[in-house]
Amino acid sequence: MTDTQIHGDVDEGFGRVADVFRDNFAHRQEVGAAVAVYLRGRKVVDLHGGLADARSGRQWSADTPAVVFSCTKGIMAICAYLLVQEGRLDLDAPVTRYWPEFGQHGKAEIPVRWLLTHQSGLPALDKPFSREEVLAWDPVVKAIEAQAPLWKPGTAHSYHAITYGWLIGEVIRRITGELPGAYVARVLAGPLGLRTWIGLPAAERDAVAWMLAPIGEPVPAGDPVAERGITMGGAFAFPADEDGLVSFNDPAIQAAQIPGAGAVSTAESLARLYAACVSEVGGTRLLTPASVDDAVTVRVSGQQVYGLPDAGHRWGTGFLVHSVPRPMLGERSFGHDGAGGHLAFGDDAHQVGFGYVVNQMGGFDDERANLLAAAVRDCLGEG
Image (tube, rainbow, N blue to C red; front, side, top):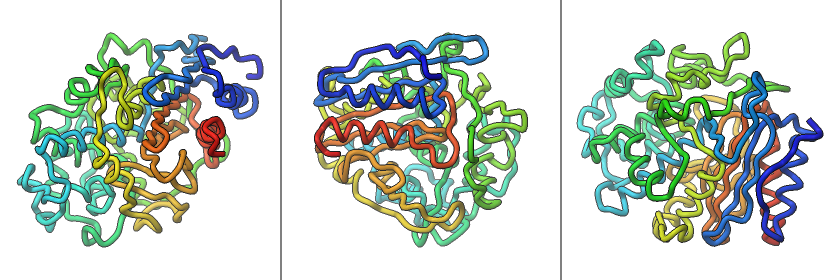
């Protein structure tokens, strides 16, 4: 798609980001995408282009959101830190302080932090789920309560691809009385004016980008446990079924609460959200310096119990941090990527918020987001 028209604005000094964004369409099979960057609370990049829906030819607009998959995890971690700052959540307290039923079958001593660092031993559940059960919230929560950890909690880690969302989401619900989507709407989306949802309103359904199945080399298969965790025991195909239909295009999935992978957002909103974590945006600063210090502290790295061989990922509390396979701006960067190529992060050393969303899911060795992050580093003189 070499002639894709790029729309939006780029401040002086950030032209390199626009060059890479345009190059992704020309040489990396981008179909539709958006990228945004905030610097010291001010938007300096806001670009979009291509097709939001390749079936109909609908163009990507400034307001087009997409399912951002595991970028959702970073949103949930921000919510957890807000509750910490309010004195309502202690990350190092047992989960059972907030969710007593969680403590069954050897889970009584698991601290909240381990839910966010992939150390709780609950990346997959023994119970097979129907799609309807996964979308209903309570059946998954009950299954988590009845599940024994798959290893001794705290001694190892494995990426909790989907269960992460219910684990920390139920803690948030027990503290606030709100499901994660309502909490995000009240404390993040409302105050910051974000087009970000966990539980998409019906009125926004037609605006969402249509996701396309990965192209090129597929991500190598992990193992049966990791696969069960990603598909919730076969409740849905992930990322796509045999016909190439991406499961999360389903309006029912988008409308549900799947807070490990189901958020829908624009790139601009993700950038604005992370900018507000590291600087003041429109009079709002979300995270304190102490919270950011905690967030960027590496908690786990190295080989996981299940899944792919170690590629060098490093995890803070709820966030992916600057890592070899996912370089951001530096050691003060924290955020999350999402299946298919999305990336969102903040960095308080540079007071930057970054967001990039796509609808053509990438395969193995997809470099689109990394190249855009590198372009931002170049523009900041950190290349």
